[in-house]
Amino acid sequence: MRSESLAFLTKLVNTPSPSGHEARGQRVWLDYVKPLADETFSDAYGNCVAVLNKGGGPRLMLAAHADEISLVVNFIDENGFIWVRKLGGVDPIVAKAQRVVVHSRKGPVKGVIGNVAPHLMKLEKERKVPEIADLFIDIGANDRADAQSLVRVGDPITMTNEFEHLRGDLAVARAFDNRIGTFAVAEALRLLVPQKRKLKAEVCVVSNIMEEVGLLGARQIAYSLKPDVAIVVDVTHATDYPTVSKQLHGDIKLGGGPAVTHGICNHPAVIERLEQVAQQLKIPLQHEATSATSGTDTDAIFWTRGGIASGLISLPNRYMHSPVEMVNLRDLEQIPELMAGFALSLKHGEHFKVRI
Image (cartoon, rainbow, N blue to C red; front, side, top):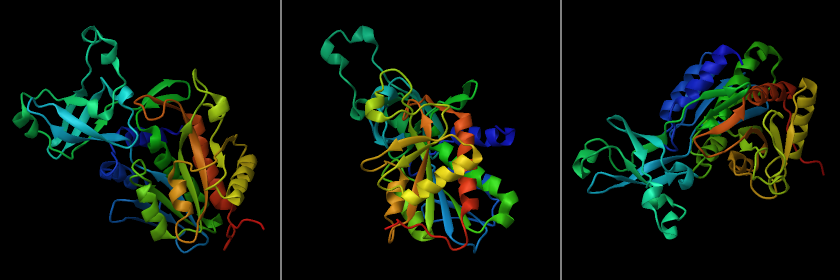
């Protein structure tokens, strides 16, 4: 990967962006895309947009969500321990015994999610599967007043795991879901800039908010931008490790290239075009099927207004919604290449419709 791109990815992943508190990460993203775009802006809730070839047509939206799963301070007890609620799909089994940071208004406060030592759990019933309500955070406070001098109810909390190369093209971090997406759409913009004269479409590159808590930012920005076609980038479950059933969850592996999804919110003509572009660019694709919702912003975008032709590109990700998400960086590099190729394939005034 290009060194400047890797530095951007690392900074993007390492910058905390809890759902509803994405401003710090959005600043990193905007600083990267602003020199590349004709125009950049953000809306009332912090969705960020970079526009290339303003006034072209059709209007293409390349979108990915900026937020990560996290926790929030819910209650501080008399002993100064912090009890939490979740922001998004936090797994309480994985969360126990992790280092965290409470992002308070006075600055970051370090802590740990408490865990009872196995020596103290003699009875089988004490080894129950934890729930979010069982999690507490120890910031080393003496009592409630001491804790309240540092944090307050409503402060977001993230785990501390940062970007790390594992070996070869593999990397590990928290929050690859979905900082890889906002990275990819920004990189697609970078790839398109030298080819702007060939571009017929107006390209709106979007880093949207609050996907993990209900696909909220995507609804807002899709309604505002009113694109003719949209490509969403997110992660998908790699199934190439022990205990995961391929019969149930499909056959998706790291190093096999990006995945495209077939069915429901994915417009067949958009997916067909992505496949054609991938073939031309010699980008390997993996394939997924969906029989209901995709669980991504594609679900919110495709039914906005009268329906927006949409397609989902996914990066295979092992151990999703954990502090040790693992991805292949070459798979990731191929996603902006695919999106840039898709953008260049669009003809002036082209629209996607189901053939009947």
